Length: 343
Ligand code: F6P
Image (cartoon, rainbow, N blue to C red; front, side, top):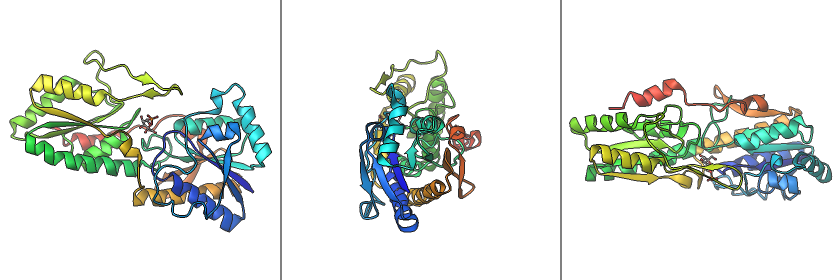
């Protein structure tokens, strides 16, 4: 077979590890040839690709980013995008397309597959961990590790100066990174999109903690966290060229409010793309290798429209359309664990 691969959306650690695993089993076990489309769906729509083999992927297991490049372009952004995908599949002789991406990239995969333009198999990627029907997307564990390490560092400087430290982490619609890193890092409070916050209650909680003699506080805020309606103003986010809302600013806004309401010295740290860069964790390397092997197996079983999912300690297949139908929120039970440590 001739198998195409693309990586779309925001990058994350582990993309290369997935491609490497696909190349390995495709070439050594199935005798396939593999091509990698450049910059996500752009490469498919515009017919730009490179040949991928085991040698090409050597040494890439620990390397962050993606050797294929990525973008947020989707066939739906072109008038004739789906037809162009079909044409690329035909001219390149590509029998199957493994789509590695988050919600936007995978949804485009559903559209392409349902239109019969390509035989699609999906792999769930995103540091946000917000794809449905899988307990873990790859990249998430690495991001949580980076955020936790940052919080650990902020504890000591916060304690030295008796300061409140607000840490803004990624998580546009859901607060998985914030919740996990907040629990792992021993945060005082964690604010997530799923639970609109009351800034007055946030300030009161910090004052309560200070009254008990604990001067330093760490407040973890997911970039998509929002105040309860009418309680606080946030800066209006901008939109990039792909119509993707650029979040950010909630950490600064929360820090300013805390300082104004409590009088405590407050600083903000925005972790931003540091959470997406660099080498994948050991867990992500294993998960990515497993996802890649499972994806090429699904291709050889002709399981089009399937997505690899991590459930109950195994990789299983779910329907891609079902997985992207709804984003996966933080489990209320897990958020209650974080909440148990709030002042
Ligand atoms: O890929 C997910 C993500 O990292 C989100 O957590 C974040 O909001 C967004 O991407 C940032 O996108 P960009 O890199 O395009 O600014």
